[in-house]
Image 1 (cartoon, rainbow, N blue to C red):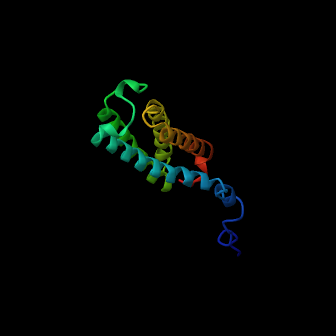
Image 2 (image 1 turned 90 degrees about the horizontal axis):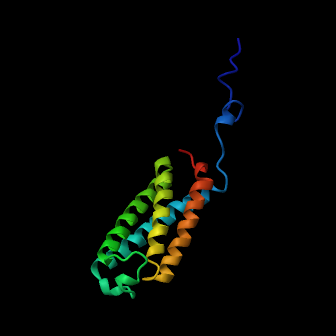
Image 3 (image 1 turned 30 degrees about the vertical axis):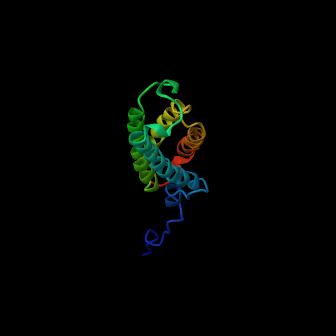
Length: 147
């Protein structure tokens, strides 16, 4: 009696089809996770600055795209930053919910920074560009990470 099933390796079919080797694009997903951690931290700091030092930003409230008090902008940036940092940790742990939340947060972050552009143009432009890269990495290559 021979038992061929017990000697089958995981590289033989049908096991090989169920296991996919990660490609080099996994680095893009890790990049997105790290960027969300950094952007979340930066957004939170930007929010705290807007909350505690209203005179830090150059433009007046009426100069913003959406005229709001800087305290409201501060809370917006602080909350977006905390959610982005949480999504970044989730992405690094390979969670599917974190990919979805990361994409949504990056879209809202880009929109919030677009509205905040007159107050801090260089920084807001950089954040918008990184948000676009994060959205690309999570939508095009997010499934490369095993869940």
